[in-house]
Structures are given as structure tokens and as C-alpha cells.
Image 1 (cartoon, rainbow, N blue to C red):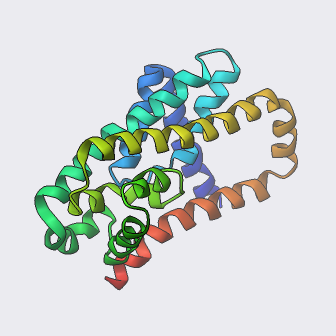
Image 2 (image 1 turned 180 degrees about the vertical axis):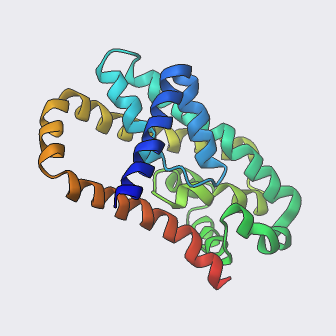
Length: 208
């Protein structure tokens, strides 16, 4: 438990240091990493940005907009890879990008049901939002529409998580009290959520 706790603290410290040093562009950089199919969840990035908003470092609009910009930046390489490599390439090498055949099938179903709006909706859903860009490229989605829907969906998602961070910052003393009282339980909950996040990405790869 101590090792896991230390690991989580190091991740949180790195996120904090990046945003503190780079400001809004730090938010964009970290969100771009997530959108490149690297398991760095936005749920760990944007709430800290919201915490800084509560301290007056920058505005909620700045934090959310740069979060969405980062998503777009990170999504473009994945889209192009899917577009240029096609389904055979992604089916063969997708595991290196944490994309399984099941993920592709899920994206196909979303796209068939909602059309281009699927890219807007998926950007507001945990986990799914991180792997939708490659399938969008494979499906040859209209690039301007893909960018627009990616930005808008990510903007909604960013506003929500930044707002969560703001609320935390406004009541930080209360949360600190709770943390000290139930620190073990809170650490376990954080670990479980992070493990579940990674589990979704890796379990389907073993089945592919």
C-alpha cells in the first residue's frame, strides 16, 4: 500500500509541477498525452487545474479551453495514423496504442448509431474518449467535423472536471480533514479507480 501510495503521490506531483510551471499550456500538454492513448487520465489532470482556478491562478474558461485544445492536439496524430494505416494496421499494431479489436468494434457501433456526432458524445465519456481518434481515422471521418466535435465534446468534459476541482479548492480545508480521517480508505479508492482505468485498456488487448 505504501508503494502504491507513493506512486500516486508522484503522479500527482508531476501533474502539479507541469501545470504550475507551464500554466495553461501545461494543461494542454497533459491532455494531449491522454488523447495519444497514453493512460494519463484527465480525471487526474483537470481537477488540479480547477483547484488552481479556485486560487485565482487562471480562469475556469482558460483551464477548460486549454484542456480541449490539448485533446485536439493529441487526437490528430491518432486520427492520421488510423487514416493512413487503415484497419489492418490498427488491428495488427493497435495493442501498442492500447487499442483492441473490441475497442474498434465499439467505435464502429457508436459511429453507425450516431454518425459524426459519436465523436462529440464519446469525448464526454470516461475511457472511451481516449481511443476514439484512431477509429475515426480508420472510418475516414470528415476531418474538420472530427476536429470540431472533438473540441466541443472535450470542452464540455473539461468544464465539468475543472468545476469539480474548483469545488474541491473552495472546500479544501474540509477535504483535508476528511483525508486525514479516512486517508487509507481514500487512497484505496484512488488506487481502485486508477487500476480499473488501466484494466479496461489492457484486458481487451489480451483477448485480441
